[in-house]
Length: 141
Image 1: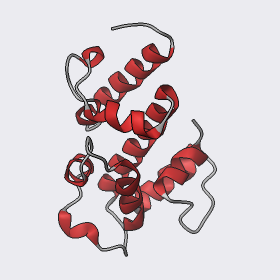
Image 2 (image 1 turned 135 degrees about the horizontal axis):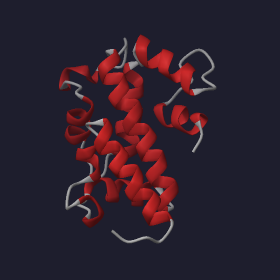
Image 3 (image 1 turned 90 degrees about the vertical axis):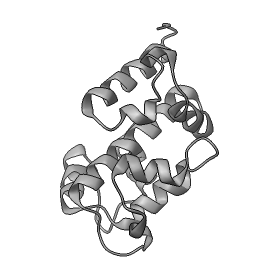
Image 4 (image 1 turned 180 degrees about the vertical axis):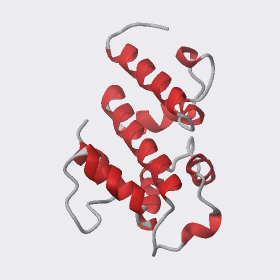
C-alpha cells in the first residue's frame, strides 16, 4: 500500500501533489474536500456498508452531502483512516468487494466486532491492521 493508493481512493491529489504521509497529513489538517467523502462512500457503499454507516464512522452529518467546501480536520482524519484501511483490506483480501464485506461483518479475529466499528479509534485500527496481517500470513485468531 502506498500513499498514492490512499490518495487515489480519496479522489486526490486535491490540486497539489501528495507524495508522502506528511503531505497527506497537511491536507488532512487543512480539511479534505467534501468530494473526498463522496468518493469514499461511492467506492465502499454496498449491501454490507451503507452510506449511513460510513457517515457515522467519519462523523459526517447527512447535511454534508453537498460537494463543495472542505471537511473539518477531525472528519478528514477519520476519512483518511477509513481510506487507508479500505485500501489495506483490499490488498490483504484480494479485492475491494471482499474488503467491503469483511469490514462490515463481525470477525472472530476481532472478538466478534465489526472491523468498521473498530476504525473509530487508533487502538481499534491497530487491531484491524494486526488481524489483516495475520490473515495474510495464514495465522488464525
